[in-house]
Image (tube, rainbow, N blue to C red):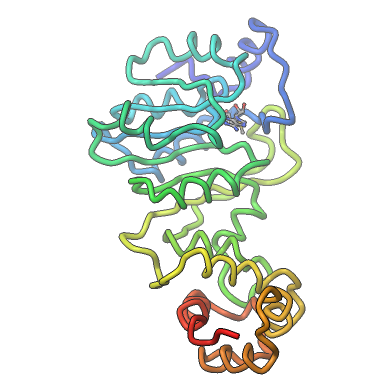
Length: 292
Ligand code: SAM
């Protein structure tokens, strides 16, 4: 239990031993607080039958605790300079696989089959590289992988967007996309001081629990996401004006768009931020009836 990696002294010692310099461009802010890690592990609810995917193990601070609690840990780390460090810090554990790949390019589904097929459920647990939080989460969610839940730390503002409800400032197409696939809960706010080096922003740990089926029934997911994104292109404009710009390729004119909005129960003067997932699902499912 001792010799935890997530302490200032152990982290400094490893940095010196390997002459490691942080790369800001890779979002390298390492956790140096064992309490935060314990809270993340508790929120994840993993046990010895669980497989865990970690994105960005860094020097292994979270990974070692995951290894203690899970059946197997599969960690994707892009920075090859960290691979020998992880080789040392994780040497006490025989249930960790580190893959030196960019998570955005990796074949995660294949890696799950190769390394976590013996596990009863699969979880994602990570202190994410903040600069690519959205592509990582959306990429994994859109693949409909068999992932039970995600406990992920991110920039506080982004975490607030994931949990936001309609008619709030943080609500937007990202809130809708994540809430379409998952149930979202705040776990805890994490201050800058528990990282080395400290980031410029506060952080939030969020838990996303995958729904058995998406929250609303949508015939054409691509259209649904196009409409949710299109509604926020100009936040302060009405839904009618945003959709008149979005649906330019067709000859649908104002009257047809108004008819479609009204038939879907959405007043044309409303703003995108006041519509919930059901409203967008209705719009997407109704649209076919209103061709040019
Ligand atoms: N888990 C460690 C911790 O909490 O101390 C490190 C977290 S740090 C915020 C993010 C990690 O993600 C870094 O180790 C960084 O090198 C890695 N990373 C950045 N971009 C990545 C990518 N595209 N694919 C995989 N890992 C990446």
